[in-house]
Length: 137
Image 1 (cartoon, one colour):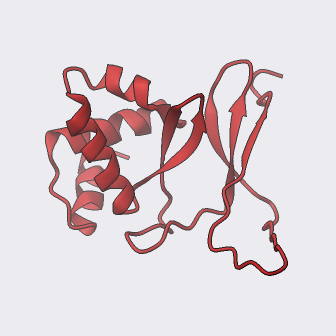
Image 2 (cartoon, helix red, strand yellow):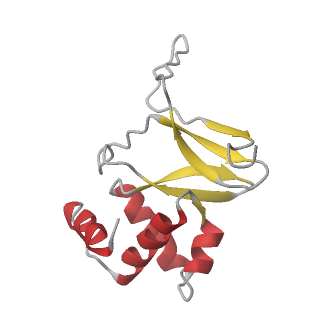
C-alpha cells in the first residue's frame, strides 16, 4: 500500500491524513506483521505516548487496525483487512506468536471455528496461538 492508498483509506473512514497517522500506518505496512506498542513508539520517535495512544485508539475505532495480541503487558497491533469498518471488526483469522523470532502474524483459517457455551451468547472470539512459525522451522 502506497502513501496515496493510505490517504484514501483514511479519507474513506472520515479521518484526516495527519503526519502521525500516515507515518504509523506506513511503518505498520512495511513491517509486514503485528508491531508491539514499544516498537511502534521507537519507530515513531519523537512522539509522546499520549499522542501515540490516541492515534492507535482512533485507528482501531475506525476499523483500520486491531489489537492482534497481548503478551506480558505489551499490546501488538496489526492492519485490518477490507472487511472491517468502524461498526464491526470482522476477522476470520488467528493470531500466532512465534516463540523463536517473537513475530506475531495474522493467519487465515481454512475453516471457520464456531464455539458455543450453553447459556451464553458469544459476540466475539479471539484466538491466540503460540509455537514456531514456518520461517523458523
